[in-house]
Image (cartoon, rainbow, N blue to C red; front, side):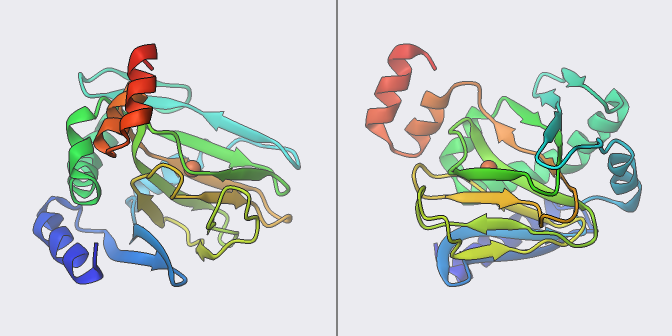
Length: 230
Ligand SMILES: [Fe+2]
């Protein structure tokens, strides 16, 4: 997708976006092809402060994940957040995120089943391996929460190519959004070896990976996962 076309399609759905969002579309990260969006001021101040209250203490190389889930049938589960808080989050952002998925990967929208809303707390020396995101993640959304400065998300040109080709830089309350593609959307993250790193993962998911492989046109993987009902 060309940047002009991307901007035009996002502008068509932008009436669904919360007014406080500050949206940028990108087709590259540091000249490397990677279709994505960056949304600054993602949460309201009130929401942002509520999220910050639940940060876990973590040791040097530790990661702690507080899980939450919002299903399309209205079911909500959470380790830490109030159901009312998550219901309001879902109402405020789901229509916008679903419309973004419609632009990034239209065929995936019909397979949406639930949203994750995980608070990830990582120690200063934690490193997350290079990965392309599991197929069940239809839309990947990471929102940088705390501290004021840290590393953002590193972009790689292969699973084993440790030196990043670019970075979606850290800024508090910034969301980095993309729709994963098999063996293409390689990324990793690590804290800056000095500070803990807190972010929210707010993904739109399907329940079976074969549906996502079908939407991506990956027929072999679709067949393999369909037989196993995975
Ligand atoms: Fe990821």
